[in-house]
Length: 370
Image (cartoon, rainbow, N blue to C red):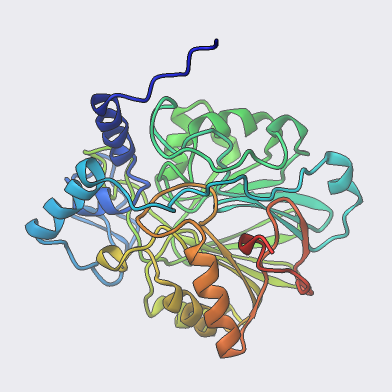
């Protein structure tokens, strides 16, 4: 008879929790933890201060009681049931031939905040993470709920990879290195591009932007816009690099990509200056009331969409990694319900399926398993 594998020891479980907590992308831990900034300086940026880059409105710091409770919850208390799906979630496999045949103005959600767009006959990719874990190590940390619908080797040449910030669930070193040869340019906030160069990406392929700076690539305009977040990949580089949202526009359409952010007045400003938008790709997931200054709650995501002047909304930053204490499907379900009640058009495509940016109707609440 085949011997059943042994259950992980309590010590092994604690080590895995510690590794997961060390992933600063799991927002809460890094938000509450040790600070420190890089020796690099960006005096030309209005966003750079004595302690590194900063938000327009300083997030509320957690007190020592909240911080201690948060560490306890991550390392000892464990997580409630339901933060990881009990069965495989639906994913539509995607081929290069399907991409080539798709019309202009098509979008594919590949998981978490990774979105592939086909614009002006070319391909553009946001925050690509194809590794199994959003973690500094691949033996522990938040593990994917699903495989990517397409492999890196099967992706077409990318005109640009657009990065919002340097947390592990948005900036993956192995993915960046694998994409370097087939990517014409990497668009990043200040400082993030320096990391890419250190990882071996050719300097002439990297373009770093401050908030409100813009660049045109192959007929598509990109503007780095403010967000309310933070950065860092370890204990001693907090806020050493900038974070940003992005406005992506052609002559025919406008898309807003939020990256990670808390709710702030900047959404209204972006909407007034660069909106309205045909589609908003807005963060909804990995939230908690304790860190809502840097990750929006669902009701705030809905308000951000309204502030931006968005027509259709696609929620991102969910359904791929376990990064908080809520149920894995709660972000989609809550935002879907709120949007229906408010009469806001929301599209929720199955991962890997095509979505027409200007006509993204016909999607269903797939997480319900109906």
